[in-house]
Image (cartoon, rainbow, N blue to C red):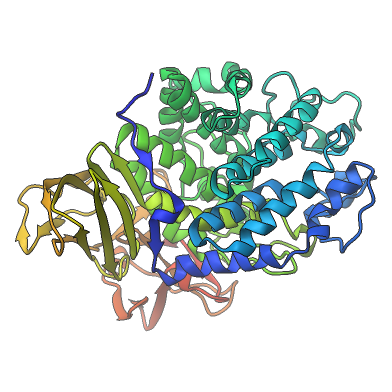
Length: 584
């Protein structure tokens, strides 16, 4: 059984974030969710349960159409109420961060109203009964944990009792028919995601919901065709739905962390290594929402044949959870590196969630790329559910706790507050990272206290240095590892981490070494185009690597008789761009 060696998470309220991009995402998503009326949020739940359903219909995915047919209706009515549980979860986490009474009251009210809608008819009418149940489960667990809703566990029990007869008896693979009473001409009846449920079932058990959830977690693990071959290092990723199967790796990690299954830890580690082999330089993966065969040219081909390169908020949410669990279990800094790359180059650059449900869905790594919202009919899509959770979770991704130790995983301006051996402690990060390579951390202690501080040194940071109160700690900063400093800390102690931000090139794959992305530290710098379809001038490797910084967040490459502007994903705005360039 895994024991004290697991790193633990700090609470949402233990971390105060002072980074504008991260805080803006939290404020945006929270304000949108708070503005939605209770009746609108409950409308499809009530309609699908045959109850009176007043209020405005939100439309898009959230809309309920009893005659829905995927081939005819597409995104409009695709997954009614699918994000309700995620929104409740996000609001509960927001309350844990802010302590805002209005947020808590909304969560309590939504749970009470939701409890009145629980019927088997809801699951009969849903194309995604397991998917929706999984999200409802998490919303209620988070309500219990962070909002202290006294009724959450009873509502959870009622939800589970009602849902189980409408779920498969075990995990069913994506695209495998199991609902024989449904329209065989509509494949969306076969797209449910029961294989992602064990994570939250185990989490419910951990948080006191009862032994039933431990048993359910084991029951719904997708072992035979997924985790078993992965544990043997057999690559079975090809053709699988990208987001949901990466999301299922968190179920494998919870099987290890709760049930002690070494097989599932090995499966998650192997799968993640396979995923990185087919990832873009940004950290994104799964063009057109499909995982790809090892050694294929699919990633390269996607630069011209699709604009649906990476399902950004959902994919990053799955990625952050998997890397968070893996880091907690292994203390391997490469998982923090992967999380950091994903954060700065994908979801932190997502367009904001709009009050009408417009949501950023796909990042576009095509040679003719643009940052755009998903089409009108896809308002309130799944990514509108995960983006608010991602925005809250930056806090629990940044720091981890071990026995008498703190691990600094992400370099985000922030303050961590905790207690140890009766002492009140805080650690404050200040930096302009990832644009500048120096991160300064300051310790405050109510009394001198001995503990270890660990700082992640990214694998790309050759020549990194760590200083304590101005003194360099020799041979401490090894790329790809955590630098550990044990001492008795006192108020005013200062740690400086220097991470050299050198330019480097990464090829799209080994078979196309002349199609490259330009990186500086964790950032991918993307080439701005005059128009979406206009060609860029030819550049050489030397010209890219010699990119000149012309402002805090902008670089230029001298190519032939012109200059090419290079920007991070977060700074592109509405400008067309390309992530990859062909070089000589």
